[in-house]
Image 1 (spheres, rainbow over the protein chains, first blue to last red):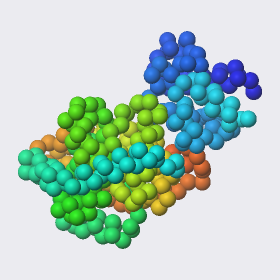
Image 2 (cartoon, chains in turn brown, green; image 1 turned 90 degrees about the vertical axis):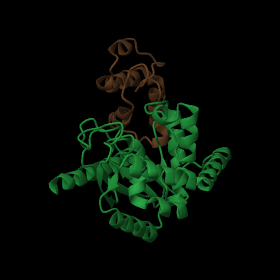
Image 3 (cartoon, one colour; image 1 turned 135 degrees about the vertical axis):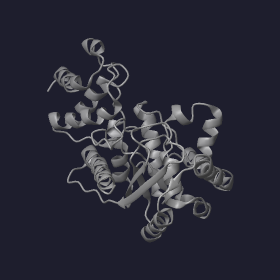
Image 4 (tube, rainbow over the protein chains, first blue to last red; image 1 turned 180 degrees about the horizontal axis):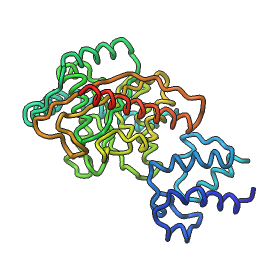
Length: 82
Length: 248
């Protein structure tokens, strides 16, 4: 799976939790999931668990601490897949 | 569990010991405020405290108190209800470390000092992941030393006035899965006049309190295991709430 494909999947997974649709329309690696997309912080765990299901990976709590932006999420998934 | 940096460990020792030395100057006044000024009353307080003290004595394990959340004074009322002020003066490590919202309890320097003295580790809810993680690591460290902490498993005060099982806070499970032997204690607290959420309970309110040790289990690992643990704690609180209303 290419980085672009992972990015697209990540955006698709995050989408149902997003409250700022404008920020989602202009999403980049640097888009902050909580601050820019206005995802509820309690829902970030659901998003990461959805990453686990979608990409068949396992994420530890401490790995998830590094996920602030969409790019961070993509990097984590790439790392877990490698 | 990642060990805390030396600086953080020293900061904890300082906070704990200054709090301990000054405990008589804040434990008793807080009790005075709750009991005399606010007129709060704990139903069957003697029985509750006997049960709690016996539990603490028998288990000897680190205790993570996981209560329902309706007011900003819940943690103070719960600590008072479970231990009683005089007992805490002689069992200081059993005063729960509390994780209040920074903007409510520590944004001004007088309240920040008060929070520091009274075993609080403020956190900005919804803040940066690294900052929240740092607070969680501090709580993990304290529990691994056999201390007691209190964290609300709901993501905030319940707007409906009932335990909201779909607003689970992940930190509870994360702590439980990372601290060996840590024992979760579900606590259900409710004032007779508490209809929904509020800043403080009504003056003169009378509180029902019940608690129960639970042992969460999960076949999963990683974050999913932590989530399972958090959810089971919250589900038990829902059950305790149903028992409360059924018994009214």
